[in-house]
Image (tube, rainbow, N blue to C red; front, side, top):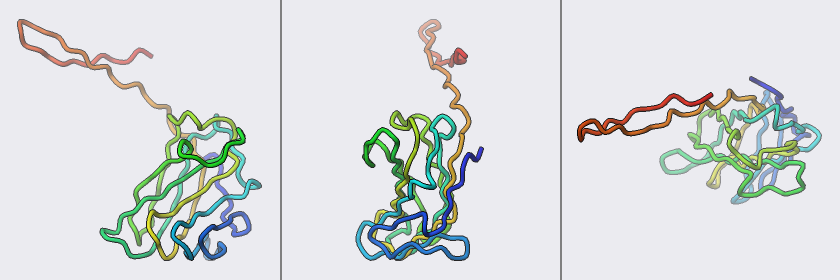
Length: 169
């Protein structure tokens, strides 16, 4: 379920290691000027309670040259706990370079996803790319995680059989 789509207008985003973000034809775009570019949301557009949203959908296209045309997009988040972006506040997804990718970042099991999300940082790719285009950044409420069936083994006259117990709900 969509909770909040962020305004992709260039005034709402700051680029690092790239040209200033531009918004044209419904897409936020940066061109790289360094090795590790990133795009930061301004706090004025990003204020979501983690009880209302536990995921983020991003539609992104990265162009550039890399072997096998596969890279990673990283999504960092900053909460109102005062801590900056960190390794425990990130999720990583594979992308196909040169194509539009719809990525769902799932934070349901992330312990640091609590409080209010006040900023996002998108690292479009893990290589020196040419351009990054973002067509959507939307906070989501994902379905509840269903408990897994618990395996157990039964020994019947020396033959073991693995069975699964339905979870207690």
